[in-house]
Structure formats: structure tokens, C-alpha cells
Length: 565
Image 1 (cartoon, rainbow, N blue to C red):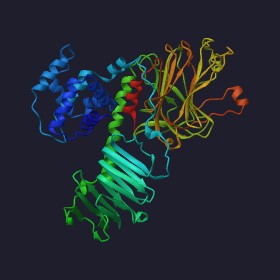
Image 2 (cartoon, one colour):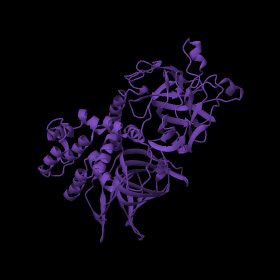
Image 3 (cartoon, rainbow, N blue to C red):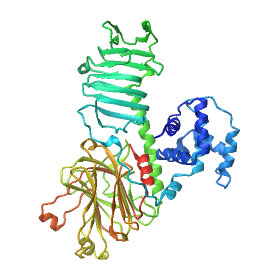
Image 4 (spheres, one colour):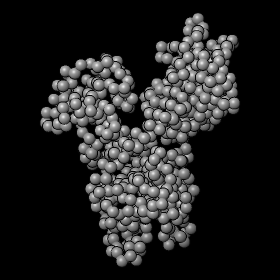
């Protein structure tokens, strides 16, 4: 993300203060750069802020007042910009910064989430490699990134996922707070902007920013270094701050801590609720300010608040999708009890009322506290669903937690035995209709297979595979998997976490049969059973979407962003 966009989004999300000069630079670019304004709108809408704001955001009434109502006429943008020119420059405030009315107006001018969906339909951007954060570790892990709260990573920093293992190296935050648990038992709370180098399980180097260290007996002797300090744990917890102008402070939050100047042999000890500042003359007393540092309780409170906000934003985006006439199935796993044997389909169009039947799968927590999911632990556990009719284009999207890849192939979603349709007295699909199988390989590849039509003798066709990106460190993490088949163009594209990772040419115009589908597991065909093939998906699903049109890459990216935990 470029610097201007990063500053703009960071200030919107966190109400960050900007200098008057920087503020005017960003406002001017919003006024004059259509592409930049649209990109900003897309980023904000990824987080669901526009919809969430209408019900819970205190800045929204001010924005509406500045707009003078919900105008939508030909001269709206000129009218808005004229009002902007006459607006006074407000004083910076942390809780309510009126200049964001300007940015909010840019959001309204460009349009809402659904409008952007329509604008971007049909575009086919080039395949983009998955984020660097998905690559496996090339060195032994020394820590785990346990919690990530309201984080924006610095430019050039790989996007890290909560729960990921970390090797020695740099961690750079533009804003937000993370918890890093080192294998020595040291627990670090890092608040951005910050630059921290993890050197070993027992040592880290803080170049800038704030770190609070919580330590137990197993982490005794842990060292935190700065450009001028060496801080050694002698008991419970301490905080260290290195400002951009070079000021350095140490605060003993609980217990005592040993401090010394880098390159010098002498050390001194400060006790709980004491603090020292390093200046040219050495160490000097400074007021003890524990509130300056991220604390366990505050991080948890912010994390819970962030999770609640994200859940509200996702619900708004999910509800908006339910009105799309092309969507046939949308299981959001919401507002259901642990005893429910049916999985409700939330669409309001053609698929309304076609609920899924739960067989064996158990209800479990989803991406956020308060959200439901279904957990699959045995080969017989599945959800049966129907998508009547035949289709030439298709989008399938699922939020999935893969706990293990214990079988050569795990079937996420597949057409079940076509004989079921005949046994139920229904009409078989056309003989040229293709069955489908959406699957995971044991090596971490996402695959999609177009099977021959029933009774046609057509070859099953090869499995269309993405690179092996579901690496071991991603097991146990929530992932957004999607496959899009554009039947008219003859292109099938696979996505992981909102990014296209593989594109395949397929024969255009083929019809698909989705009349009987199985989510989570599927019964092997008679031929597969003779070959000893078994399918076993071990994990959880907390959202499934099936649409009879190809979603654009921009739509999938936005929906991933608004739904990422």
C-alpha cells in the first residue's frame, strides 16, 4: 500500500492526528485524483466502516450534516467540493476529528459497496502471487504471533497472520498492537509505529516504538536491547520506549529490572513503579507512566472490541450479498442453535428456502467470538445441499479452517452421486452437464475438477490445481478459499485470501450440474472405492457462498477484507 493511502486509511481507522500540512496534501489528492479516491473508498469499504457507521459510528451524523442530506444528483461532487473550500480547519482531536467529514464525503461520492460490485464485474486482472506472508519459514521458529489488533504493517513488511510462527528477523508496525510469545516464555506487547528485531528466544532489539515485556521465571535473563540500552529481566514485567527523536525510557511495571548502557559494563537496578530516562549524561529519573505501554488487559479489551466491530461489519456485507439474484446458496452459520440439524440458506432470491441438511458435523465457534461454524471430524460428516438447474458460470467461496490434511484428497464441496436424483424421482441433469469437485490435496494444493456428465462416457478431466500454498503454518488458521468459473470466457481462477493464485483455460459454454452437493466430505464413487480412495476433511467451515455468475477479483478481494478475522 502506498504511503498516502496508508496514512489516509490509518487516520480514518484510528482517528490518528495528522499535521495541517499533511492533512491538506491528502485532502488535495482526494479532490483531484479519481483513482486514488476510488482506492481509498475500496479500502474503507473492505473494513465495513460505511455500513457499520450508519448504526454505530459517531462521525456519521456529522458527515450527513455536512452533506445536507442524501443528495445524488449530477452536481453532487461539485457541490461537496464547494462546501469543503469553505470549511474551517479544525483542531486535531483524538475522539472526533471533523476533517474526516471530507474523507467520508469522498466515500459517499464514489459510491457504496454494491455499486462498486457492479462496476467491477467482468474485469479480469492478471494473476497476482499470494502475499509473502504465506511463504513457509526458511529458518527455525523462535516465537508465535499470538494476537494482532488493529494492525497496519509498515511498507515492505510481509503481512503476518495471527497464530503464525516467527523466525528471527524484523517486525515493523505502522500502527496497531501485536503480542509476540517467544519460546523462552517471554511475552512482548509491541505498539506501532515500531521496529523490533527478534534475535533469539532470549533476546530482542527495539529500534523504535514501545514494547511491554511480561516475563515469568522461565524467561529470567531475557534481554531487550535498544540503540543505547541493555535491559535484563530480573522479575515480572517492564516497558521500554524509544521515540523517533532518540529519547529512551525504561519503566519497571512489576518487579525489578537491570539496566545498563550499551557497550558499558556497569548496570543498575530499578524497582517496581520506577522509571529511568537515558540522556547524554546517563540515566535520570522520569515519571512512572504505565499507561504509556500496551498491557495484557488493554490488549484483550481492544481485541474483543475489534472482533465485535469486525463481526458487525462482516454481517452488513454478508446481508448485502443475500440480495444478489445470482447467489443460490449463502450459509452464514449465524443465529442457529447447537441442536439445529438444518443449515439455513440466507439468500432472498432463487435459492431461498433451500437449506442444507447437517449429517454428523458439530457446531463450533467461527472466525470471531459469537459467530458459529460447523466442525468436521469424520469422513461421514457433511452437509447436503441442492442448487437446482444447470449453470455455465460459477463462484464458490468458503471460509475454512483446515486442521489437518490427513488424506491424499479432501473434498470441500462436490457433486454427490447422480443416482440420488433418479432414486428421488427427480429429473436427471442433461447428459452433457458436468459434475464438479472442489478439493484440497495433502500437499496443500487447492484443486477444482470438472467431471464427465452422468452416463456420457466423457473423461473426468484433469484436476485444475493451484500452487501448494496451504503450507503447514496455515493449518488451524481461517482461510478464505474461492474458485471462479467464467463459462463464457472459458477461464477458471482460484483464489486464496482474496488473491488470485492460479488461472486455467477451460472449454467455454459447458453446463454444470449442482443438483446434489455435499459440503465437508463426499462418498467415493464405486470406482474410487475399488481403488481404495477415501475423502476426509478435518477442519471447520463458517461461511459458504455459491453463485451462478463469476465474481470479479475486486469483489472477492473486498469481501475477503471485510471478512478477515
